Length: 331
Image (cartoon, rainbow, N blue to C red):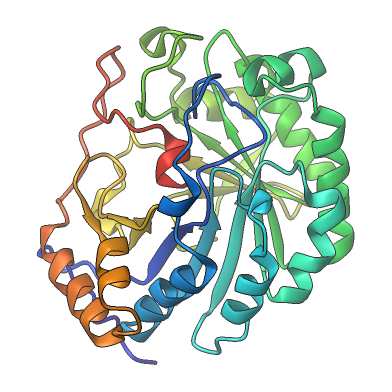
């Protein structure tokens, strides 16, 4: 297999693209966006053809894993056609989606048939009222139905993603693991990242480290270190006596930048080299000025990689280091 031609100044090879197809979402998760979120005009969002052109350029340079993100990617009209084109690319080892699960009850089989291999489904609470507080939408039952539909559709792996906040949902950690174990799912617990200004909570007060989460799990389950890997930043443990892998994404307490192998492209066509930095390259202008010029696009990507920073510097205090919300970047 060809090595990636995308190498940053620190010798890290980029083999993983997170491709956002929309900034829109049918939820308003408190740590992800504001209630009165202003979305980009549709003309500023990459078309499906432009999104494929970006993915094609990355694949040609050695990217072997693509995760489609949003906003909520499943609200993007025509998405299955893009997924089918990507799913047909033999060079790709993995095509995955991160979703809030709200549309899975009707789309799970379509996604599987398009070639999507893995799903990450956001779920921060199993309690209806608390779920509604986190998402600003009363749709827990819809998400749970979607998870079951995904199980029946036969994906290679399904993983739950849970952002844990002290005093808000940290008491549900073991219950979320139990939910995953009972259904043969994996689960990752995520330290909240300081992206965008939030009003629903104070991050320095609600911060819950991965170590604290693991200690809560081990009050009920035995965890065994695992070599499981998905190409992302999670460090995995296995629940003894089950197939469930428990991952920890720890941007604060265990900086994972040294092995970073990924970049992001936003729905507006901005190449984000680091989640924890504001700098981005405008690919949309290049694509629209030189439509069909794949060589020019590939050259721009290779040049941009020389600006990828060594690491992020997230803090747990109230200072916002990156003003864009996660929904604008792509999960």
